[in-house]
Image 1: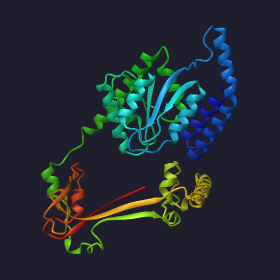
Image 2: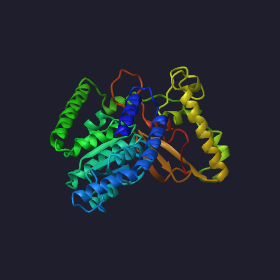
Image 3: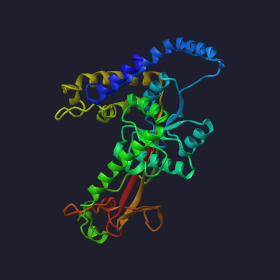
Image 4: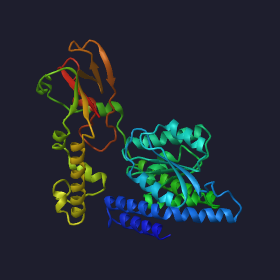
Length: 384
């Protein structure tokens, strides 16, 4: 109906860069409220239709069942939530498993609920590998449920090259939330087989084009790349840290942390990107295209942070660890003490080998002093 037509227009405007993600989210919220008003009337209409056809009016009748989840390791769900609203408005039952959902739980729930489609969402790069893992496990289990892939970090090419090669029963990349209903209805239509075959043919073509770009690439052997590692003056290593081991920071004041927020990634998450020289915060507010919307979003974020501090909603704690470490070849050994005679763990380095006519080929191990040359350290942190 008109609501879906409106969301379609929003999707087109968003795709054309004439509407921004915060506006899309607000539009979805408005749509959700509109649907809440219309739901009693729609339910009454479905009940009357059920009675007329001699069916049980108390038994819900959906166009299909879609299970959605943000994959393990990822907490982003903005797009997934919009998809849920759009599909719900079109009489699809949506089972939203939330964020950080392990593969096993997704597949077990999908089988238990007898869903028609599984939808995976993610924003960060590691989520791509997790989606590949889910597809592999679906094949191992012999599942035949089509798989939808979506999220800011995903792409049609990645889906074609990495995901659909792991699962044979339909993998579809959904560009944005407004397109989800069209994809779902096509998968569940009588033309499902031909639709999935067309998608498969398209992805095969994309995959072959991608592989063709790799043919001309040349690679250094590992020995050649290692011979071109950087030369570093290890007499200039930083001074010894003030402490070795782990340091716990418990319930640090949120008000102080706010002062150190890097707002540029915040705007990037909402796909608000200014043009140079107004690309980053605070210059983004001067950008002719996104400046006004960025300012609105910034004020709303500050208002929410004030509420978080006032109501003591969050508690910020973390731990930072600093340990003795040295590189051994391309790898990094981490030691239990300053004696450096017992290895607690080892980080394995991967050196650049793509031949791009550079004089230096880097590896993470290059940034730690070699064993026996100078004492060095490595650090890590975790926070909640």
